[in-house]
Amino acid sequence: MQQAFERAIGTFLARVCVSAADSRPAIAVAYSGGLDSTVLLHLASWYADAHALPLHAFHVHHGLSGNADAWVDHCRIQSDRYGVPFDVSNVLICDAEKRGVEEAARIARYNALGNLCRGKEVALLLTAHHRDDQAETVVLQLMRGAGLPGLSGMPAFQAQHELLGSGVALGRPLLDMSRGELEKAVLDFELPYVSDESNTDVRYRRNAFRHNIAPVIETHFPGFSGLVSRTALHAQTAQSLLSELAVIDYEACKSEHHADTLDLVKMRGLTVERLDNLLRHWFYKHGAQLPSTARLNEIRAQMLSAASDKHPFFDFGSARLHRIDNRLELHPNQGVPPIEPTLLEWHGEPELALPQWSGRLVFEKTDGPGLNAEKLRSGRLTLRPRAGQERLKLAANRPSKSLKHLFQESLIASWRRAWLPLLYVDDNLVFAAGLGMDVRHTTQGESVALHWESA
Image (cartoon, rainbow, N blue to C red):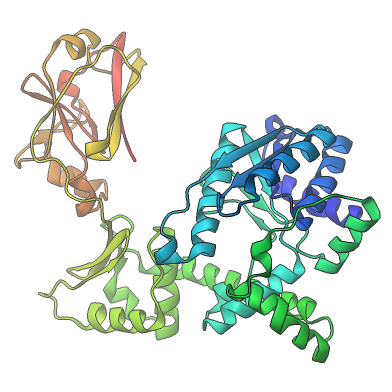
């Protein structure tokens, strides 16, 4: 078991460590105190000691059980026994009626673990999912009619997990081990653990499968969890190939004159299957809700077949799909940008957060070209939306051009332009977000360069 664990962690760290500077990244264990995570903490502690790596134990208090406080105490004691720093995060379960308790708790748990990792500068989070968990996941996805992404189950390593957030990789080093092996390890190493009473509640589908269905399948198909896990690996391979094909099709079908949009004329040369694969890839890339097969059929029918003067659209939660002329565009549902000028005051800060514009204005000291710092401090600064007819001169050896022309040259999508404000000093346009500063108002020598960072 230790050898298999060491190989798995070594593989994960090789993907996390991309330079000599992070050759000893901090790792953390998601430690609930249950049997599985107890074995994980035991092995991780051994590995961290052997390789001189910083290790943390993170616990999430969901507040769903009357025993939750006692579990925190247990986890703290066991972490202290290993000499591992212990941290706990108390979470509030939201949307339980809409999502179900299990899913709402999972989202809250991963969000909390991601925040704990960033707070302690942890690069790799380990969870205790094992082979039987993988089999349960795949079978439950099959019962939902899932496609290849669902039947792929859980990957052993994820460089980024959408619920953990940025900067934290996720590793599952026990994924090739069975629940029986972990139960044996608890006995062999005499490891104390807690039992969550909710794990026996068969009102939850996963528990119902684990306690009522899996034993029957195991009777007729011995070792079925290993076989299902092998199927998950085959599905992961097939999904990887589809992802590579989607990237190829995206490069072939993207619009030449509008950033990150799809050209409908080019898309019509693809088969239905490749079209659906491309659209799913594109939606996922933008963090949009992935459509069902029926929804994809509807999108193809309306977006590819509508008359050129029609502009159909579809909502996908955080994004909206539009057909504009002969291209598809995904617009985030950000609401409406300000229509009135925003008065600013700058006192030398490195940046000004502007949540109403979904971004921030960054001030960087430079030796030029840049804007005069004293004028920025004393002048009347306003952020304004575009009114039309504005012009900007981005280089001394080039003529001024309309903002519309410059946005088109820069391949900035039309929906994004509305969220790129203009900075005026007194009544002079000195900076356009997404484009740059007007050289007619810049100076050489000690000055300030402006940049815009969208949220």
